[in-house]
Length: 156
Length: 236
View (tube, rainbow over the protein chains, first blue to last red):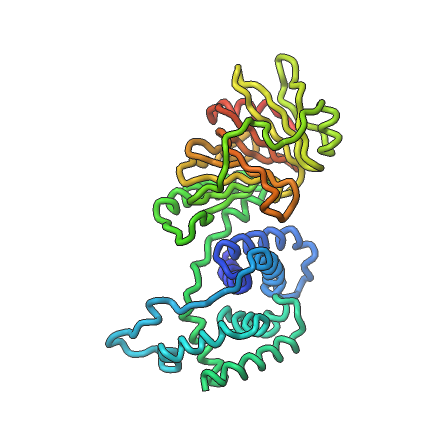
């Protein structure tokens, strides 16, 4: 369970839009997964199966809360790092462009924003995103493609 | 990977995600009924964590849920601000008093009563297909005994403020929670989903434990030891 709770919570947070809802969703997801272990197909990957359950719980809570996640950059990451050498990531993305890119992600249509968030921010593969959201892998590809196209307009 | 994708991955590492909570205590408390000793330790640890959390946490939002526990059909939530509530009799919100047979018919199961020296209670209360309650006595002190069947966590919820003490206890071979001090609120939800259907009142000291498919709840102005003594008279 320890191996999956961070990714379960993050996935739930990206969908549900709040830490409290995410914690509830992740907890209920783990309990439901435990009870449904008998229906888990041996040999199938466990993580996407678990995330599907957690994602369903998170969707339910998001519907009732009616909110949408507004992602933000950590305060420390938003500030210049003084004299320290920039990390490889920082060299890719300076603070200003980081904010622009995040603003653009936050403005994406819901379905595209969710796919992009799970794919790039939660680090899920296309297969895992498809399983977690209960959509075909082709839909993940097309939503990702449309989202990247929009983001390129901002990011250049 | 193209530059934009790389930038998104880099951005993901710098996003302000809330720290992932340790869910293991709460999850295990719900699923690991067989490993009772182990669950007991986890539960005790969770309560300690709550204590620390209360001292340290300054939630931005009022009424933020600091921690929650499930015991059978009951959910206990620790919040910083209680919902609006009022003082009310123990049986308020439970509907019309009935005979035991009528209440059991409504609840859909037979109530397990403590072994009485005197006459058993005459008035019982039932909610839909899930809950049955009656008032028993500890000396002259009334104590509300509630039994819930199944895992219907929408039905009954206790919300506590940071001053409420939550202790892990043992009731025979079962784990439970004893809530005392501070202010805590009992919420009955008579249909799933809608917050507007909650009945809310302040509650006295409460012992909650689960055994088999039942969740038991004893509420009244009694000590922890007295509540556990009463609970042990109930044999499922």
